[in-house]
Length: 329
Image (cartoon, rainbow, N blue to C red; front, side, top):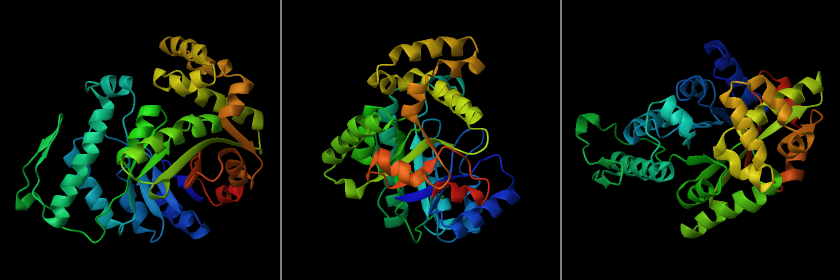
């Protein structure tokens, strides 16, 4: 099980340099940038400049607001700039954000995501192997690539594509078409085994591949038993409440019999009662979703809860210095 780390997008350029070098020096095997308040692609080349071994990727970039061609160009350039260590993690986001934050119609998100990934590989095959670009899908038709717009081949053309997901359909899609899955932090060990792994396996069967051909990336909600633990637990309950208020994640809550909690939290979110929502999360719900452990016991606790099915794991905490490593164990 490899240990990855999330770098906050709010750190300064100097901190990106410092933390990237520090992460590699102390033994992290991958660095990840999320798409939240900033574009996740922008800091990756800088992190790559100051490292030479760790894998660096998006966890995750949003696919639907971007065209396949724009994703292809950005990924190709990053892969070249950081020496073949890039991992392209893609996600759909949820309807509210796509329609109200990006102003794009929420239309067949899984079909569209699958088509984007197939289009990416067609574009990259054109650039690397000289194949004629002639991609024709339901949503995208790409058949123009004249020499001035072709960046040409690169040394490491095989860019791994991961899909972010937690619901059954997207987990199956990841097994069918992607190289890995980034499991949403709102997950439980039972749901992981009975829904996520089963769905990924169905997709792998459809693509005639095995689990050994596939990477499972797990982000775990985590509280370390140091400092003000009670405050940290309350903050993590707010995180669980935030995610659970989105009906997209209703399936995992219903799996445990908590569908009514989703509706209550959703109503509170519409009223803007964000600070009160954490109070809806009971200790029982919290314990299913979150690891609470002593510093140095994180990896052992992940192994105990999730078994040997995880390839990459990172806690739901941003890296802020060397002491972070000693908390993991």
